[in-house]
Image (cartoon, rainbow over all chains, first blue to last red):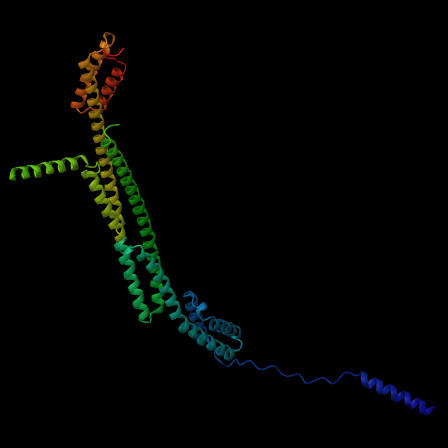
Length: 215
Length: 150
């Protein structure tokens, strides 16, 4: 009986031990925020300025991957700004580098595209002799074109893009006006051609009547 | 021999002139020629891209085409007036020479009066009026019979 009692107590003790919760792990202390690093104000301003430049010139599509990296870094930088300035600076430096890459890659491509667009419209205008039909307007558009090409060649990409954009409008206008003049001339020429044909028919009928000796 | 050769050449020359004059087309008029020239200039200007000038030349060409048409119409009118006057004159002369049955004398008298009016209108350059009188003469004479006819 005594043995039995000992066994029951031992069993209960074992059961109690197994149901007990594990010992608590020691709480890791939070990483201390580096508040000693200065606010990366200059970096934030520069990153934002570069972003504005990229967006205003529509450069993102020409270096999309770099642009997305720059955008992510800028977001990270802004999120950490004032909380973890060292981390913010690192992110903003990365954003600046990425925006600069976008600018260096995209500007030449963008200028080339702008020039190509103007070249197409210019060629269309020249194909209908705008240089003759709209002499002074064509000359103005051509002067702007030369200015834009010079800016491009000098590496002044923003200026070149702006000039090409203005020139695109000028050449489009020259083309449209030339087309109207051309069509008006075609209609007038067709009218006089028809008139000549009619005059010839009348005269031939008259000749036949006169040579036939009567009516 | 020499004289007859010269005469032959002169006759051939006159025949040539006569045939070329009769073969002259109504298109051989300065207004039509000017219109053709202006049309050519219009097409050249158009090909060069000078669309304003092309329109102007074409517009001028149309003016000359109009003038040419007036010339052709006028020449035809004169020709018709002349032909009808000649036909009316021939018919009146014929009936006068052969004589008409008495009941048609009034018609012949009227035809002579109308013929005189047709001539006067022709000489005054009123060709359409001349044509109308000549037609009247021919219509009146169409019903007449000569003395030989029964």
